[in-house]
Picture (cartoon, rainbow, N blue to C red):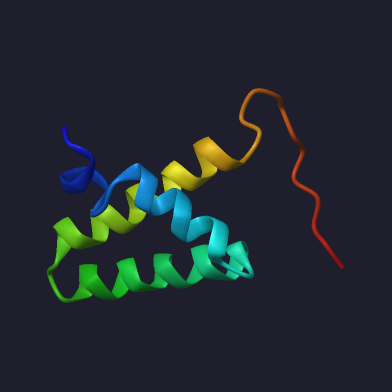
Length: 74
């Protein structure tokens, strides 16, 4: 499956965009909200692209090699 169809952009475009985001956690939450809205409008292909962008971020920009316990921040 090509990157545009799966992610809505290329990996290089996503990387450039992610590196320019000020608060990546808020950005990820925001685009997941966008995906929910797209689902409600019946635009599931676009919603899936946004969800795939979020998964791409987690797998490429966070440490998935080790078990990391979630710790709630105060």
